[in-house]
Image 1: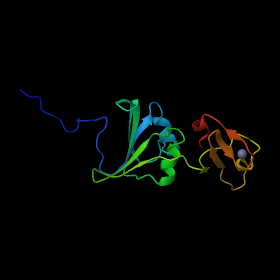
Image 2: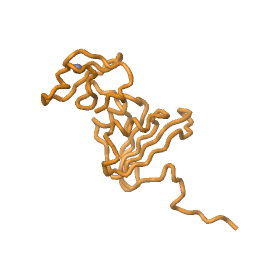
Image 3: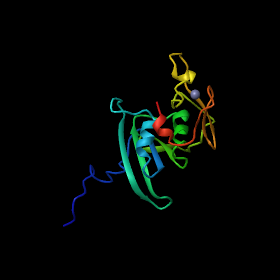
Length: 157
Ligand SMILES: [Zn+2]
């Protein structure tokens, strides 16, 4: 007798969502950093599913993040490019992919990353958002010229 399929379990890893955003082709191991860069914490209300080390013909292994009931803005999408430039974003409405876009490395990042220089004006009590220009060498603070060359995620606010 044929085993009955359980629709609840079918494709659990990559279960379809009704509305929201699927971030695909994330570099393997970067899914949690993508979640961090999007500002999702245990106290936010998004329904989130993460699949890591999914086999991919194109990339070998990749991570996938699915967010229910949230469509990412262009600014949020482009932030992901800082850690995973090959990621693709699928906006889902009523179970269908409505929009598919790549990520572009932004020219400037505001309010996302903390300047590591303790003397930087963006680290004082002044109401100033941090601001970095993105260059191939890293993130340049526009206030103090500090450069974050690697490990951007550990400086995320
Ligand atoms: Zn600075």
